[in-house]
Length: 602
Image (cartoon, rainbow, N blue to C red; front, side):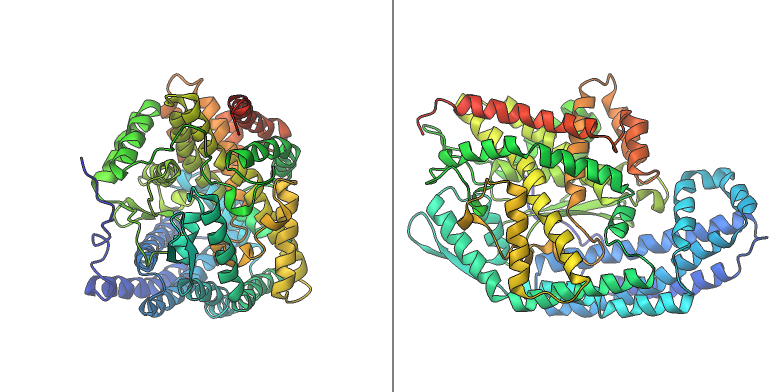
């Protein structure tokens, strides 16, 4: 079967200026007055039925907002930089602010209930699916200010946090650069295309030329980007201060339902095990024909050059069928789900100008479906990327029968399902190798995840932590931001990067630093990766993996990360043992790679 590489989002709304989208906006705007009236009528003596009806109303309104938000994100991703989307996002932001006010009033209502009345509410059978969320809402409400102040803070964020995040899209959408390819031809590319090419250009000179020009391109945008990053962080820190939050990691940890003890245990284990990846990169440098045993930034995921072997490429259909077949080996439901997504145009994968960099998956509550955005270039890594996003979608798919709040799982456990799916494909690729040369190539592709999570992501975390420490004192210059980034990369890569191979303007180029609704969009990836390795090992021991796995997914928005791990895997995330077990699995791949490449003529 030939699968389309363009998604179908017309089922959501038929156009940016369609009457259907306008009607959805009007309906969403009308929800908030109704919610306000419903919540105002609640009191200590209200029936459980009335209280839980209000909860249902809040969840219904949230689902409608998510559906509109999905469409705007999807439209802007394939029409990157077009200005007509701005007023639509602004309108949605204002509705979301009003919704947040109602959500906060809901939390305050729960907090005002006596302990006995709240306990009575939780005991109601209809409340049981959302007991965890009710407790969480009540606890969070204790930090809230008065209603008028909270509303004012949220309104300010439209022209502060959200505005600066949108401003970054305006900056990056207009950037272009060029490079000289392996045939000596000059190629002009957008920022998004350049980022995709850096992952796959085989010729080291072409790759280095693109990286040099990519760095220069972002350097020219450093003043605007620095203003954006400084003020985005400033808006966030001001909000924290108003709510009595002094630790800038408190909110990211709360959003991920993760303790600082678990985060510390994870990063300590990562730092302890970086040495094995330094050895991997030293060997990879030789396979790439580099002049030293150190790599440069653009070489992290570059395909290795094994003598006598030409890395294969995949057609989109081949990648799709490979994913479907291998998902099915672990879970027939996963395989059938992936097939359905390909057949029904849930995936936008065409390689063309004008698209946003990167990839994502997002759910559509109104349809109980997902859509996936990425750019497919034919590499083995691209197949793994599709699998990654399908993992997100499968996660959402298994929650659609639950209340909306039970579908709001945190980013760290979201990355677990996606990375598990990616691991299935990477492992299958290696196992299907027809020669040692092919196995080396595929192990290298598989290792790109490990090196990204242990080094690249750790560099981002170190940079952002140090940036927020300094930003509390005042605004940082582009030069200071470059220095922080270089220092973070050198620490995280532990000597694997050459002095000339760092990427000082990575802080400028990385979209994740500019996302408004998720602070510290980095450590959840490493958590998800290592947690998924634990699930992958656990899967081999399950007689009915599919049932057990889906049960775990359905609990991801129903308890803390620590409770989830304890209930379904029987492990303690605050201790290093679990994290080390994941690192040991990576070491097996490193050792195999080093053994296979030991005697190559390089």
